[in-house]
Length: 606
Image (cartoon, rainbow, N blue to C red):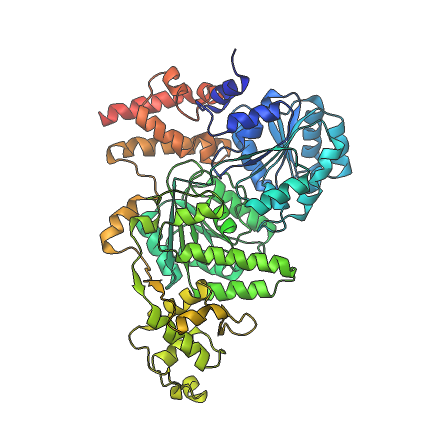
């Protein structure tokens, strides 16, 4: 007896087999039961509700937090021959009425809607008049007040259970630690739902973190050497820095556009559309950008500032390589980032309990940055998924960190903090250690301290590294009320007294010459020279169809499908149908065209 879910996967979506526990989730929802699904970005979460939507009678209602995301997914579904639409505030009354008519006639397989619209009385009355196949709550971590994407309107979604008790609900997210998972279940009334937790490992992402030293120049070098033509996202902490960085990259010859909540809505929408629709675009953004972005060919995600938590870092880096092809998660950070984030936390009006959790999250993020072993092991361990051995696919596995006995340097640094009165930031403390006779040092009489001039064995960057690592490891606190003054805490006593030794890592601002070739090859899609002509021809073919239909190029076919076409060189419709991502609808629509393109290029190559 044939499996309808597998048939839809093959014929409609063009995939040969399910991944992970997709099939089990689909069976659960098709049977009318609730589910909570944690699956990494690019892991195939959408299929977990899209396939049940096509099997169960009626229309599936998908709760989605962003209009751009809805439109993106709808374009992709229509290209597969699936009847999908949305209702949102940006639509004209005529368009809304048309969608409502289609709903009542049963002419839609999926309806995408924002949570605030879904819970209006008029929308609920409309749903009362139709057959609802299921409710899919996407980006379910938005319900968590502990999280970085909290959306108050998500808290009201538990009303769906009360009003539509017979309709199954599936909540989905890519990022949720144990605390957030518990909150999702409690707030959405999913205590009895079966929970599916996939691996958090994204094996195609190359993780890479360096110390910050002229961050924009470091970013430009990285882009020029490793991603000269690729699309990507650059995250910054402030709106001002977003705009400055986007302008700077544009002047350096890259197609870069800004995105943050302070831009006019029309400009935000236009910039997001450009990023989704065009190839080779870099968007420079605050964390307001990217939730649920479906663009599969983001080849790098860069952070010019330290994220607030590992959840935020994982969520943001997860926007790279959704198609399963290589992508780079690149970041630079410095002590100033830590000071700024701790000052922001101190100004928070959240409860003491929430602030304490936020501090713990930042400390975990710093541990990931300062680790001397495998980064992926630290990352996965945070999500309660221990990795037995080093991953072999992060910067510290590729080029191991150099460490040195920093005990004496740490003692000097701690003593300098203490003897100067615990009222000064790093720059002044370094001046004292290096014996600088400047106005500030003389004004405070710090040229008479016993620590004055005792630190000439390290240069300025070396001392900044020592102080940063002492802060990151919790030996030193940052005074968040002042100007980043450093203060000692009890945990540093054992170092000062000589009862504890400390190993510090040597900072690395860019790859050493020995490893530059390896860095250039990881995290990017490499097309062999003899396949280059076919690759460019297929991309041009895809681009022309995308422009003709006013959809992003990847909606026609993503990079992974193009790579399979190059690898297998199909010559018949049957062979084409075996290529991942080419379902029945695309085969009928593009089959002859594709075979002609493949045949033409083959003749030219041979």
